[in-house]
Amino acid sequence: MPHVRILRAIDATERAAVEQFLRDAHADDCAQLNDHLRADLAQGPRPGFVAALATQHDTLVGYAQASAGNAGFVVDSIVWSGIDADIDRVRADLLAALLAELPTDAGVTWWTHDADDAAPVAAALGLVPGRALLQMRVPLPLAANVAAGAPVATRPFEVGRDETAWLAVNNAAFAWHGEQGGWDLPTLQQREREPWFRPDGFLLHERDGRLAAFCWTKLHHPTDPHDSLVGEIYVIAVHPDFHGLGLGRSLTVAGLHSLAGMGSTEGMLYVDAGNTAAVGLYESLGFRVAHTDQAYVRP
Image (cartoon, rainbow, N blue to C red; front, top):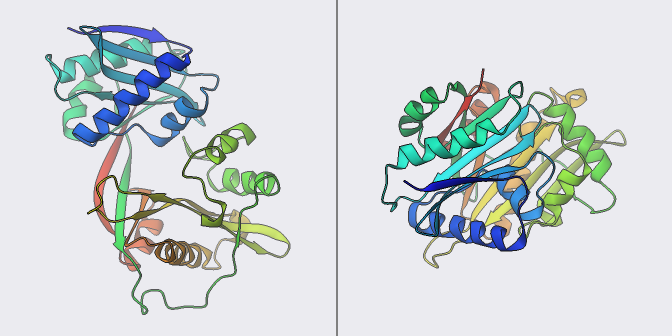
């Protein structure tokens, strides 16, 4: 069986090895670390970071990470499919070692990408089902009849100017959310340093002299030239003071128009399965569920 070791800090050499493992895992298995964790690894890590590394014959074959979130710790794990060992056993060992390093009274949310395979591992670790996250996709550009309605005025995000106002809207809209809620300036600045960050794809809508809503988009450039350019609505929110004005739909359409204008032929977003209003809105725009990620939580 692979050997598991814990890191509470990571140097440049270790980080390079982990990032190469993650690139290889994505190429081989389409496995990808939760975005909150990947950004923390690449840009930090920030306080609360813990990692578990599984090695076999001096080769990294599994990785798990915990990073502080709004409601405790967010956890994810990836094990190489070609490992000469029981994949579920290695994943369980990684997660058990990681959980043992976290405060016993802290919330833990493990995001899994194959709920059927993960369920027995979660049960063995004492984790129970939590939120389900839908990945939804839509062809771009939107049909004219779907996108009909009065356009909403937006402007691009300005680095160094808009952070405080944006944090206020984001944290008010996502006060309940484990990953997107409770952001501070360093968290936002992490994302501003990401190679995919584009202020022109970060649309802000102001009303009555205040930032009322936003639609932050992200481009996923294909690694295969035959694949399409996918445009993601990375985060979208309306401040609670401006609910009921139809801004959610208008900002979604504005974001998708922006992505189509940048060459995207497919739009994508993630939404909580339990957010029936948002799911219904996206379905009305032509989105359909492509994949579901399941969270397991420590009671």
